[in-house]
Amino acid sequence: MSPRGDNFEMSSPPVPSPCINVCRMNPASGLCEGCWRTLDEIAAWSRLDEDEKRAVWTLIDTRRAASVPSKEPR
Image (cartoon, rainbow, N blue to C red):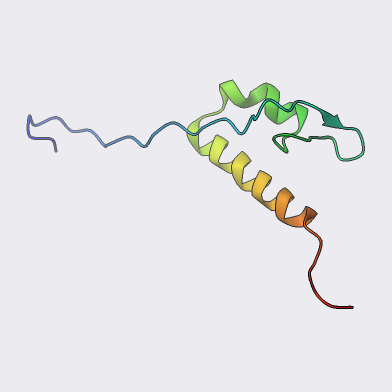
């Protein structure tokens, strides 16, 4: 409880958009080359709640990691 007796939780800051203003869709992957989102994810962003936005960020991180070539010797 707060000092005034209110019963509320501290909210975390809003989840930022992954958009970096490099808006080019890659036809092969279906992902934006700037933010790594699909068109559906881009279109839905403003309607997503904070947990859903965090889930999109997790997908973006997974996509980026999968695109980095392995550094293992041949």
